[in-house]
Length: 415
Image 1 (cartoon, rainbow, N blue to C red):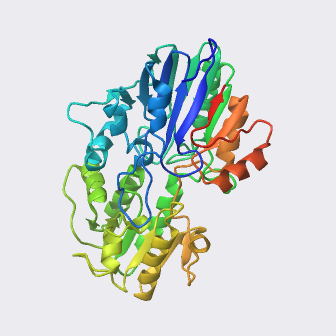
Image 2 (cartoon, rainbow, N blue to C red):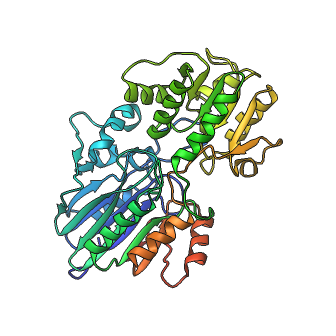
């Protein structure tokens, strides 16, 4: 247990600092503690197999008898998937109202103990856990309910961006800048900024979602056969956009894959068709049991055809590249037309050169997004997280080493 003077804070990562997945951060004062996120890690070649953060023992070691609670920044499984470990420790878990539908969809993975319930946090009201005051600020991401988290204790403050981007469906740079300015105004001095740097290698700002939808519409309009679009099932905005495109072009929509079907039902309130000119599937990460993988291997009720146009409307999660490559190569060998997002051909090391277009808009801010947040919030120190080691090191070199601190799992930093 840490012992500190008044108005002092300390942070310890239990996961998620130098990797994509396992997000879990412990922020503590002398008498109180808050856990931000408790996620699993997407495993290459498998579905979202339950796999808690590697150092959950830190929860027991650091929290002790302090007054404690947990907040979830947004309902992606790499931030939410190990939440049952918090309930098992009788820690209250707060989540946004927009995130609740996803907790029901992920029930098989979350395995929440009987009787355990999420509590709802409100962006218009601060949450107090002992001497910690926690404020919530909605941010743009690829899933509803994403929030940045501001923690204050006396004169000390920490800002955790969660997963964010500055642009949403349309250009929203000014709106997002206003949000971070609001955070700065409320915090006064921000002693520590915990910043998502996953896309530090990408110059400029994350493109608006509509650009990806414009590309997808053009492909559907001129394709002679069936169009198969793969993307993350939690990307509700993209699902809605594709359904609008299909209606506009008088195309039938078919859905394959359990998670994608759940998204379709969540949006439309009805069961999807099984087949048609467009099929929406979840197999963008090459999971062995995904619909697309089973289709290319002849193990699904829907078969893959050499007449298909396959759009990979996503980027590969680091570590999943080989599985995705295997799926893409099989599609190409079948004669299908494969279309990738910009940069994915080189990233995957494909043996052929598929057409590339703006088929995806990341939920994670590019270099410009990150630099804007730093410029607006003017933090005393910055801790990069949610990215492989090389990305964190790239951020440190680009932003300047004086303000940037590097942490590893289990290492405690006093603020």
